[in-house]
Image (tube, rainbow, N blue to C red; front, side):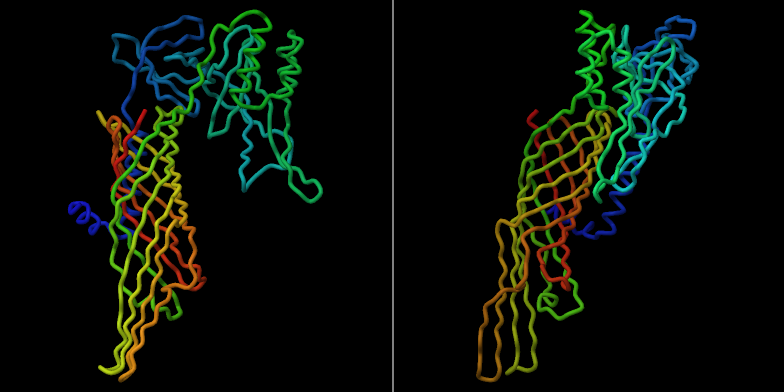
Length: 432
């Protein structure tokens, strides 16, 4: 505990913490960008149809690659292939074909969206990933986070056309869809009579489209030559415990007794449970980390107004809250030998299950002495939001983390600002 408290004293500054977290996160991302090569057994197929076995620099691509590094077994020389240099390459259970194709590039977000059904199409040269291979083939491309899907017709690849956009109806904006891809698939898979009905409930994503192609092969009493195994989200469950340091800061242009009290930091034990959803691709470096977490603090302090020995006021205040928190973070982990380091950030939402809010005022005026009991803050709220940043390391089932949280406190006054600053030293144990 003494080591922890000493460390807290050296980093108990918000701007220092922001610099530390930003620096470490930059280092992790930079190392990821220039990470060491990872050559695995694979092959390339030339434009003439010859298959050359060798080693592929495999990056578990999230966005489809535009280059691939290859070396033949027993050779040190590395060849760099672009999509039109080779017919395809394969590594592990993944097959990529080189192609020049159309892609739909409309970027629809919550803040910026299209109001036209017309596709915005651009040409791109890229390696398409084979999802289903056979008499009828399905391929996919993810570029800049946007997904497009293709069918193979002869020696070319045709874009399955889809776009969502907004239309105004009765003064409201509603989502509409250009689902040309359903007509394309009805024509492409049309020799199975019930495919039209199957397509009605389709959606433009790999799971739905792969399911349609597998139903086609069931209809034909056959199997595709290859089907990409879907990578699933992995859920890891565990418990978390540790110690926390909490300090409060208040600000206001008006006069409050609480502004004159110098509250010391409070140290307490915290505990909770977590579920970490490990995402596919990118060597599973990214995850969505979630906690159900209990933390508490109690701080007290006092001040005096002294006119003279016969006229003074002594104010003592105590604040304490026990929060049940839901913490949601995005986590990036990076392997270093036998362990992994990670950085995460996100939001905290807490509800106060318990509250201590006391104020005792002792007044003396000559021979008159009175004691008043009341609340230090008359207007409080139980809901608190916060921002979280954390750094840590994982080895086996155990992980440790140093975390900072800044919350918006308990004040329900518009003109009294509160900041809660919490530092945590945590230990996690993973069950699976």
